[in-house]
Image (cartoon, rainbow, N blue to C red; front, side):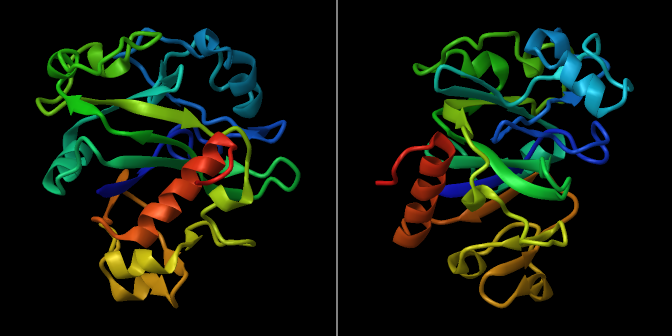
Length: 246
């Protein structure tokens, strides 16, 4: 099994502000776009929120890149270009798992931090045309942006069961308490198994801390059949879905 930490949503570059945590629930804001989408922030009932957070710079009339998309316990996720090439080179495919993370702001202190906000188990992936022919495919609730307009030749849609976090559980927070932003708390096995974009030894501080890469969308760890990483992943999924582990 490959485990992918996948960076998504608003940040200081895309959107310009962190995504919020509202009533204890992280709300990952889809990034704004100029084209290849027919979904506006207002269509996601995010118009007022995004206008408030960006002080009117972005509002409900703006198009958004609605990806990853979640509905009825399923996830549709698109990727292309260098990031899709990275996934392909490392053999990510059906049977593997994504943990989506992004930049969020603490609702009380405003502290920016990275946290996991959703997950997806891969059942099918490929070009939009090919993945629609898979046995498990179900149509998304809205047109997926990676099926709209012109994309690079390796444009792909990933599909499978998934869910967004129902609470901002502390166990889903990656950034260590009091930061800095890219200093992550990680399980000891991650250093042992390795993580793409994090080959430099000086990125790993002790057994449980990582200076995470500032750039890059998809960080891949080959956990194979190892029991400890799989149990950790099961725990993360249980936290996301707000249910007991096991």
